[in-house]
Length: 305
Length: 197
Image 1: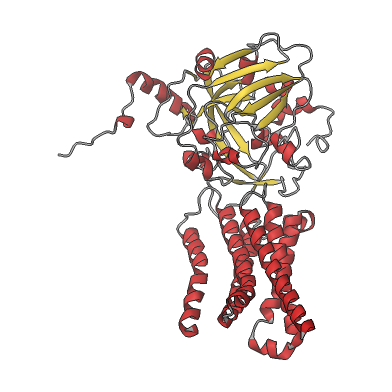
Image 2: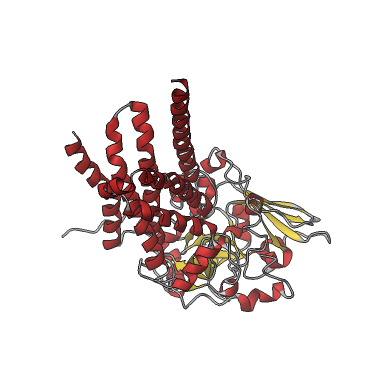
């Protein structure tokens, strides 16, 4: 009789295995054999996970990415980020704060446990996924500093490393990648810092070691490979606002009623569906209106697009 | 030579169609199937438009007349892939739902100019046979000068739909400008020659 030989990667320590079983059961999906070394809370979710739509296959969520630092084609990030070094990695939180701090990603992960968040992810290009992220509310990290009364916005800066990121050798965007949120948006419980996906470590092409996810905004708002979080007084100018101010606004909330100059935002294509599948209707605030609409009371979302 | 070359080129021009047909039939279109088909057919339309525009400059530069024999075939393949591109957009992407399509044509400049480019290809395709050349005489040449406008529209379509001009749209733009410059220079060169003699 021939014995089945396991690859070392297929063998999972028992202690992880038990946690993982619970975790996978909760996710309702099978994610393969990898396990994560992060500490994960599986209880006390503070949001409603996506249940109506199917979770996007792992293969597509990790091979179909917009990450111009590694190239402008959707398959480039997966191909070109294999050797990207994410350890050691420090994140500085500074600006209009009383006590600026620098933390390593390891310290952050040990300090704040990650939980699973199944969110819809809507790209400004008119496609969407449903991704089970691992992460923690950004406000848990931001609470480590005391913002001054001047602080109104939070600016995120991604890493600048043209030696490792060949897309940065060309002026495709004004590198490094910059994004921003209003403080109340940054502190909102749905806004998370992501450390992993599908029960695994965050792959490089998805923004390792630490990225933002703001599920009610278009995907480009969710900066990847963050190195600096800065509290500022004035509204930051993001890289995309800088590249094309009439196309990309500061808020960039998912809004089916406000069309982008190139893409109608009324509908979206679901990643992983076949060629005969129709587009689906895009939801206001990507379906998170109950949670976030209050942030924009009294604002004209056509002007503040 | 032409008897062997022409069928060979014809079959080669069909390869992009065979590839996409295979990918559709065997479900190998990846994460965003509609986009893959749209992109593939659109890219090959643009390539065939530029290839057909390259034949006259190639004839002038190499002094080999044979290039011209392929111009019509390449142009018709541009129309073939352009029509597939349009049908993908109307049929697969919007499932023949005309409201959002009309809205797109009127409001999105890249779709407007892409549609205009396809419309301009229609008269060229209809008047492409030998009979029409004889019937239209001098007018045939005038009508078929539209091919330059189609080239400009097609490249603009690609630039306007892309988030940044880097890198593919830029490459096509450079090729287009090169082709147009070669044409202009040649016309000037002819005129100079005439005025001298």
